[in-house]
Length: 492
Image (cartoon, rainbow, N blue to C red; front, top):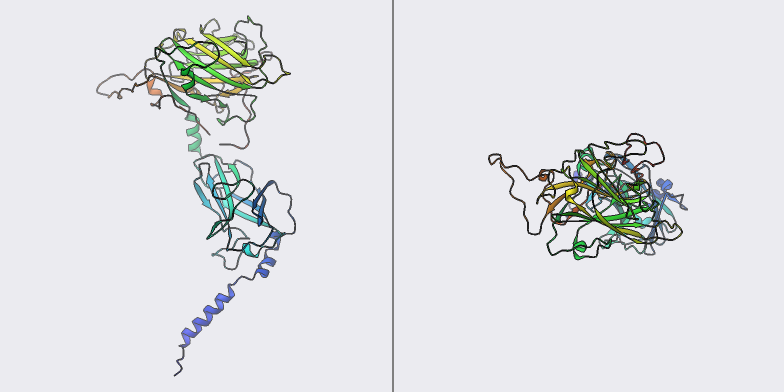
């Protein structure tokens, strides 16, 4: 007996069959529809990459339709240019991801592109298996810039299948064979900007043991110096690692009940002194020098702070200010109370030749012992265990430089609210428990300004990288010119 299908079921079967056939992609038809994205040769590409996936494909480069920094929520178009050398079988598909600077995935943008097949748009795109060798495929993707905790985002791309990623044999890639396209700077949120502007580096420095002996000879070769934490000097304006600065370096700190010890290691290709060997308080900032700013009260209010500079000739400029850049006499000084003396002992070693521009120098080292009793305006000197002072350290050349704590455009090199926090501790010492309101015990002098940080650690504030580096602000106006009222970045 022949069973007949019910008419409704038969109609549904026929409709399903027709629908399935209707949604099958005809590669030739798709090529015709996508002709504007398939070129015979590569156009002018703004950012060339040449990332090779074996002998099968090459990511020639990319274009981005917006300048940096990008803004969260902003719609951007990213265009990849692919070229196939031989057919790609195995079910490979294109993928694209957006990561933050720590590698956390923020966004998948695998499908929102004319060339890429999408489940939401039946019959769209062109499978990689249908790409022709020699042709250039213009892979346009649009997406909204995601919010990120970091100031840069990274775009990665490549081919994937059930077997994994198509291996990359040349060009930038990560450990998972994902092509690294680029990192883009992203404008931080207002909250992130505020947090950045309020953050300064902090360090706890252990007091020297009685058996530790330092010889001030400009060598930093004692065991105590070698174990001291390194304070990196960064771009004054951005807080990023300096790229094009003519001077770079780092600082180290030690202390005992008598002295604050500071060591600088400066890298520089042309070391300049330029002053008479017996000069008194010369304007060292106009040439090459290191600089120490000290606010011993630790409150960052710019009252009663100190400035000390030592140059490659071991000349010293030292002064004390009552308030922010006050007193000072324009244009040639005096700056602050120049009669004040730090009474420091310092030594300098030079790897190169001072004032000989025709040879290549490597840098210089400054070692200084500054007596605590010199800081006559300090509420407590030497500091008690747990006290925090505000300090900043600079390596300078021609009125510009690098700093431990970046100024970030909030003023000039004297801006005490931008000085880093230094807590004076000792090995085995632990901070006392905070006093309760009932106990009525005052906190340790200066300690409220900074929370406890690990002994010997240095945590610098790090903002993104912006791709376009802002110019390093001037540290001090040239001595020979008239000095306008304290421009951003100017020290005097």
